[in-house]
Image (cartoon, helix red, strand yellow):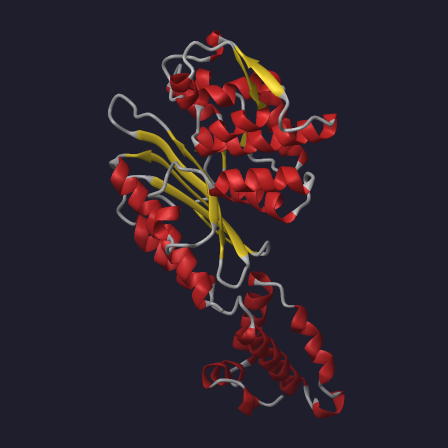
Length: 349
């Protein structure tokens, strides 16, 4: 490998002073995993006549390897695009992206974002873990009382069977909770599977530290403080989705069941999904709050995985809080961010 084999833009970099060269080494090591460092051993030490020449060869090798890898496109480009989307918006917007389990980008990740119904995904993981550990099937039945069907909340389940007093399988309750974001179905699952404490404890067991889950859906309807009680960061949310996709937490039948529910989710079609080309495989869980007396939207969120044309996946969390924008504008922010992220990783192939 020689200088002539490297694109002109890179030749200018490593033919410059040594300080610049080593700054680029630091950038690429920090920003991506570079197993190609082993290429150094392909160079004959006989060719390295002095320290200055060795430094330039190292820089050349790094730039060549990173130029050909999927992470070659600097994330600063994507970051600037996302910052442009949220600039001048009357809201705090947090973003986290994990590409192929490795490459990570965050924006405004240092705040505590109310989770809203996104936590139903976390609950589903805890419920499936409970079923697996106890050897119970998805078709385990739960008796649903009329008193379980609270009237002043979003609940297609209550609307379809308002009289209550019937049996329903765990699988059916999870379907209502995830795909339709049914609040009563969620609370029925909490009632029979250890409450919010067990879900939070399960998350901590997965290594998710920046998370609090202490209010169920019924409690969140009592006050703004209760709506804010369940919080996490965009990165921790994206990590939970990534852990689910990349680790064998449960038998494949349970994992496939939940993944299919995420894919079939009907809420929030104008958010992350709305920013993707037609036909892209994705699954997600949304969460949306009420508004305060002065009209501020407490939170509007979407957590998803997206499959790229090459089969690789990324997880993405876009959390919007304290927004003095209408719902259409908020959905537009999320969908634009989604489109920029998708375009970035498809360009980077």
